Length: 303
Image (tube, rainbow, N blue to C red; front, side):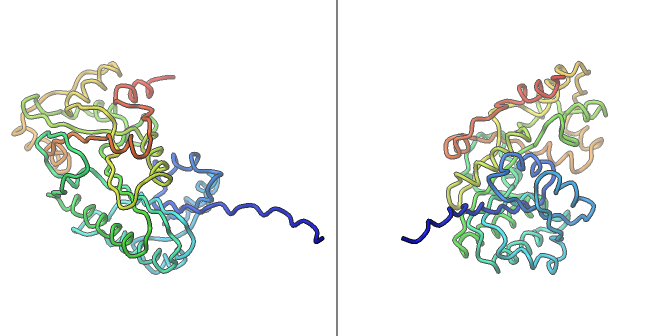
């Protein structure tokens, strides 16, 4: 009888995180050590920090496609968190990434972090993921273009695609991610008659949604990665001010806002929508740690 063969350890699946910033770094402890994690960065200075977090850093720049050749065939799954460029109506970064990934033919799952801005202004309506996109700014059109490319990649390669449409991300320990910073600047909000509904997700819950989508996301599926809150923007900042013991922001009319605020900020104040997140919770079996912004903001105040 031949001697028994030693048991072979199952190969860990490999996850490539593209755009391993704040959310990507929150994902890392949720997937290690079950996954071997590669993290793409364009900054040589970030290599030691990513390595210290447990990832294998890869140097590559989405704006320079020739640096992405080594990505083909490296990963079983991809978490694409990188934003489009700041100009134009398309996303050449996603195009370059997908071309590199397609050459390897190994990717079986891809989760793309998009934005709820693809819907444009919805007049405060509450809706689910079956609503058609209606991008009205180049910023949103770039995301629509990226979504279309990711869908095409899934059809071409057979990879399971999940599109997470994400609203405003907040967390006390996220750079620029807490409303107290805007409150301290004294930025006004719209008067109640002109105010718009806004949506939020805590960065920790978003990281958990990304991981759940990698494991349980259905093929070619869109999900609203949003919490349960239904607040208008001014009410959100009023709540934050009260919790932080700061003065509530000044209320101004839309006409005054057009004179006083930046075009970027004004564009966010011109879109009103309420995202239905039942599909996220049902299909991913995700229980939000911070179901409303009140719970998330209060947690950020804890010593």
